Length: 318
Image 1 (cartoon, rainbow, N blue to C red):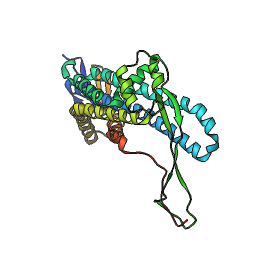
Image 2 (cartoon, rainbow, N blue to C red):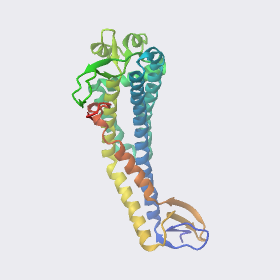
Image 3 (cartoon, rainbow, N blue to C red):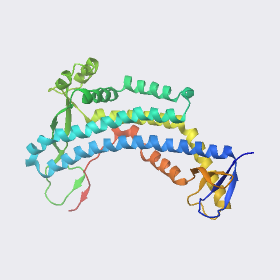
């Protein structure tokens, strides 16, 4: 005789309506939640990485705004700008490492070792490393920051005249200037770290300016695109498992909506012969919605290098 029964119900202190389910149903609901939480987990790790990237870009844009408003303060800006960019870059590098390491940990919790998913991700990561300089540089910079020093050694605030093609003013035409901020990786500084890969040094020297510096942001954006490639592959490999899980949860919610008065706080419950709850598994659309929202939020990382922010605008008859 089975000492336990399994039901779907909204837990209450008194008598409650319930739907009988099997032990297998209970186990399947728990497994489905496990995959949905896994989906949320990997999307949150990606989102943390992207937010740190956005912080880096925003920091640089803020410095450009400050310089455009107060050009006489460039000396003050230069004094702390390297520190500001290095701080944001260090956070970004940490987030990249966290994403790559912890995604594997999350995969190991829900998939069998012979699933082949980690091996496929590793193969894709190697492909990105071999074919994208940004990926190789960011990985090397992460090790540099951890063991040697901070890579941003200089900042410039270039301003250039631009034709007022987007502006039609009845007042006299003004000279228009585009203001930007360029943080630079100092190659000579990297050379002081004897553990920094010589091959990557040589690659950076090929794209360096006459002061042997390399612009940071194009490298960071290329790395973000590589992460986008990896994450899209990951989503493709896990798509069936997570979607099957969401369908199972939806099926049980619909069943409860048709047969119970309320589904607020709905759970699958394991009860003993006296009706005492021994185990439970929450059943909710909220987690599914969270996963889908995060998944859609960062869908276009592979196109980062083709987009940029500008304050250029159309003014008519001012």
